[in-house]
Image (cartoon, rainbow, N blue to C red; front, side, top):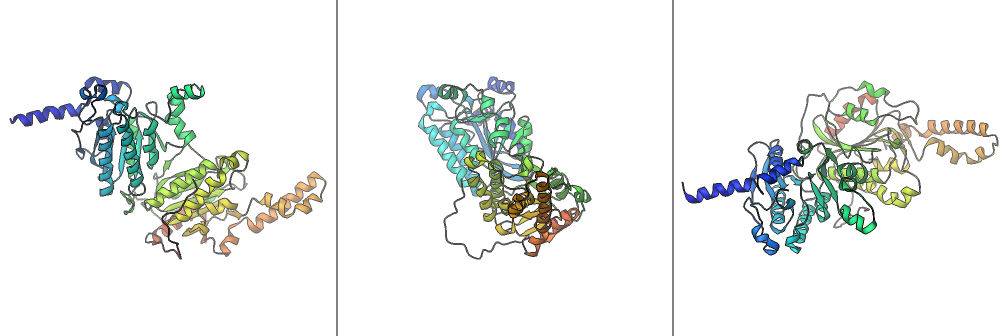
Length: 520
C-alpha cells in the first residue's frame, strides 16, 4: 500500500477520536455523548459529509504548539435529516472543553456560509467552555464572525441551537441570535457571567443550574424553547421541529397528510366554553380538536403560559399556532406573553407558515409592575408582528376579545385574511361589568343601598352584554367574516387555508424604507 495512504488512515483514525479515548470516557461519565455520536444520531445514516476534518489551530503561545487535535474541537459538515439537507455543527468538549479559537470559529463560519448559499437549515450542537483564552483576541474575533453570520442567516434559513453542555460568556449570543434553543436537563447551562463572578460582583451565592440551567431558561427567562431529558431526546426534538419548517425563506413548509379528513366534525367543541363568561377552560382542547390528530408541537410550553405558541398541521399543511390560554391568568396579555407571541409570529411570517390564532383575551395585564416594566412597548410588538406579517392569517374568536387585546390578536384591522367567531364570542371595548360601571355611573351613584346598587349593576351589565358582547355587531360591520358553529371550526379553517394557499400580498401603499423599527 502507498505509504501516504497508510499515513492518511492513521491521521483519519486520530481525527475520529479527538482528544483520545480517556477524554471520550470522561464525556460519557458526565452523561453526555461526544460530538460525533450526536451527529450520528441526528443525521440520516451514511449522509454526513464532513468538512475541515484536518483543520488545526495556529496558536503557539502558552504551549499551544504542542497541544492540538485534528478538527480543533468542532465537527462540521453537510448531511440529510429525514431526507432533507442541512448543515450540522457540533462542538467537541473532549479537547480543551470545546473552547473556541480562531480556526474553530473559521470552521463554523464556513459551514454557515454554505448553509446560506445552499438555502438549508443550520443545526448547531453547543458544548463549549467558551473563548479559548490562549488565543486572545483571535477568539473574540471568531465569536464576532459567528454572530455576524447568525444575523445574515436570520430569516433566510432556520437556525436551531442545542445547548448540550456549558455555554457561557460571549458564547451565549450565537444561540440567542438563532431561532430555537433546545436545552438538555442536568448537563447544560447558559449565562453571561458565571457563579464566581456573580459572587464577587454582588455577593450573591448561586450555582450553575440555579443561575442558567435549563429549567431557569424554560420557565423564567424564556430563552429555552424546548427541554430535553438527554442528548438523544434533544436530537429527537430537533428532527421533529425541522419536519414543520421549510429549508429556507423561498420555500413553502412540507405537507404531511396523516389521513385526518379536513371536513371532520369536532362535536366536543360545542360544549367546551362554559356558560359562565368568567369560568376557565383549556384552550389545548380546541387546538387539538381543530388540528390534524397528534400534530400540535408546542414551543416555549413552560414560559408565559397565558399564551400558547407552536406548530401544527391542518389538512397536512404546516400552520403557526398562537392562542390565549384562559386556564392560566385568564389568558391575559402581559409583557412575557406579548414577547412570546410576537417572536413566534415573526418567525412564521419569515418562513411562509400561515398563522392560525385562537382568541380568548380579556385585555392587557393592569398594574404598576406591568406598566413600569414596559407593557406598552412589549404589547406593541404583537401589533407590529401581526401587521407586518404577509402570510395567510386566520383568526377564530372563541370567547372574550376586549379592547386593545382584541385588535392585537390577529384582528381584521391588522390584516387578517379570514376571521371567524363562535356564537360565544364577546367583542367589546372592555368587559361588560366595567363598561356598565362607566356608562351608567350616575345612575349607580344615585342608589345608596349597596344591595340595590349591585342588582342595578347586574341589570346594566346584562344589557351591555346583550347589546355588544356578541359577534353579530362586529359581523355586521364586516370585521368578522363568518360566525360559525364550534364543531365546524376544523372544516371551515381547512377550506379557508386552502383558499388562501395562493395568497400574494398586495399592499395599497407602502412608503419606501430600509426596514421598519419594531419596539424592542
